Image 1: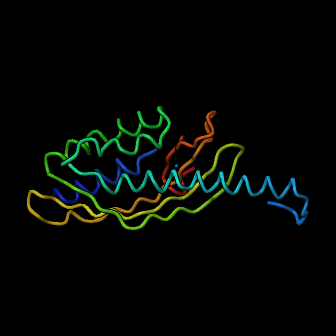
Image 2 (image 1 turned 30 degrees about the vertical axis):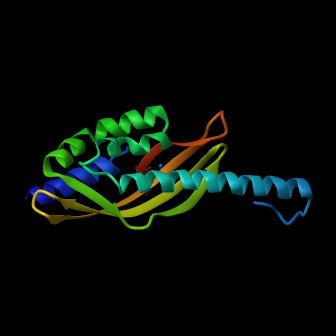
Image 3 (image 1 turned 30 degrees about the horizontal axis):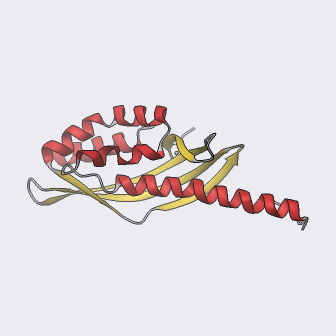
Amino acid sequence: MKRKLLIAGVSIALLGFGLTGCGNTDTKQTDTTQATATEKDKAADVVKQFLDTQAKITYKDPASFKAGDKFLTPETAKTYNEERSAMYKYFTSAKITMNGSPVTVTFIKQEGNKYIFEGKTTLTLHSDNDNKSQGNITIDNDFTVSKEANGGFLISEIKNHGAK
């Protein structure tokens, strides 16, 4: 029963947000397309790095719970941390660590200075209390990554993949 509650609670905490050219070979157009591709790659890397931090959360290092905040806008980080405060308490009491599968990030679309990606990974939970696996959680979210005024990229929204 505890295991089902853990998996349901962590799933809710992690998933509960509720993140072309036309054949003209003109140099200017090509440069713009290349710059956009580079920006898209940078934005995708933010999602990958954020999900990588989530796979390394452990009760042994309280800072690991906020390691991904540097990839989120301040507003998104605040909401994200509020929504998973119960997860932090449980991980600490049950001595939970997580490990993740390789992250996949798929481009969905661009809207102005915002890039939307689907990010996926599977997290395996392990309890040091009883030295047992607590199961797996699959993260499958849409991440909106916004270009900031300083030229950097931050995740400004996270929602369940397919949610409207």
